[in-house]
Structures are given as structure tokens and as C-alpha cells.
Image (spheres, rainbow, N blue to C red):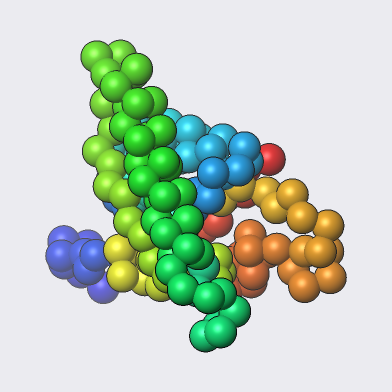
Length: 153
């Protein structure tokens, strides 16, 4: 093999360039966002903050109140993230984007990570007892084996 042959790009070998973090407003997801923000700053990576809006089956809700509520959550998260970014402006800056996807949290984060070409995914640890049976989003992301996954307590 020629030592001077050009190397092919290999995803993830130079550190993450796009870090996806899932947020839902829970304390653990906000800690995950703070952790991911620090990673993004140190790696000079893009921080893609993702909120997955739940999709309810037809007939589960009568009308738009549920859609309005999840939209309000997304708007509230954006406002909180902007406020946090303003508080640290001048101390350190992070390139960030906010995205919403629809679906269950696992499928939404997988779609987000694929579409945004994520090099790493960060999520908060589940605080639900039911996840011991079904499996948490974090465990399912790790088992998918497509990205390095960091779980923040």
C-alpha cells in the first residue's frame, strides 16, 4: 500500500461535526443539551437540538389541542435555549440549530440523526419506570449501533 495515497474520508474519525441532542423539556434532557453544548463547543461541531413531537392516532384527541400543546412545548424549548445561549454569549459560542420531528422519541431521533448526518447522539436518561420493560430510548439508540450515543443522567 502506498503511504502517500490520499485517504478516504471516514465518518466520525476526526471527532463529531454534527451532534444531535434530544430534548423534551425534562431535567435530564436539558442536562443532556448542556453536556452536548460543551461537546459541540470543544469540537467546533454543530449542535442539532431535536424535539420529537408525539403523533397520536386518529381519534385519540378531538381536534387540535394536542397539536397546539406539542407546538407550544417546541416554542417554549426554543425560547429557553435562546435564553441560555444569550447568557453565555461572549464566554463561549456554539453553533446550534433547533429541529422538530414527528413520531415516537426513538424513531424521531433516528430520523433526525440520519437526516442531519449526525456523528454523535446525546440523550438524557429515562426517568420512566415503564422503560425497564420496553427499553429506554437511550438503550434502543445504543442497540441500533449507528452512532456513538452518550446518555446523561
